[in-house]
Image (cartoon, one colour):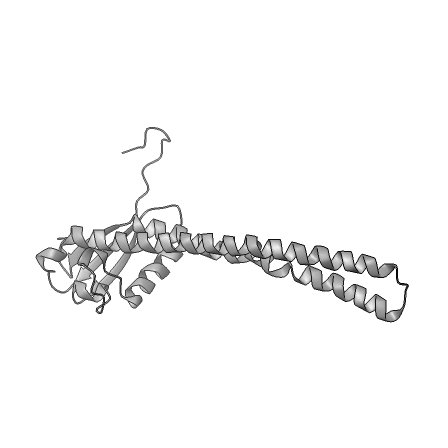
Length: 190
């Protein structure tokens, strides 16, 4: 069926396949939370995330979990789908929070760095009045270099540190929207 607005066919989801003995392997065994709020097992999460990072970013995802035995009624496909989506939604929220914290730190560091740089430049300019001796020249250049070095961390935050967190946030948001299907190994979908 064609999309009426664009004339393109809807994107087919890219498949991520996971094979487990039973559905409990998907979740962290020591997490006391209710099923729909459980944390994913670290290895299962790493597997899903690593596969998702390899797939095209703009296209939907589908996680198919192949099981050796049927899950209990309280862990049916809808419950697993909701639990996985909730988990990745929570991870997306955490990444967003980390990004906000990093930006807050960046702005604070920028104010401190600019104040220190201004002070260093002011003192260096003031030292020009005391002549051109070697000691004064070394001190003046050291102040200028020190002032610019103080700007390193804020620039690092704004130019480099926040982008991996933003990419992770987008990935987790994408994973929170993926469909999850359960299937018994060698049988049709349940």
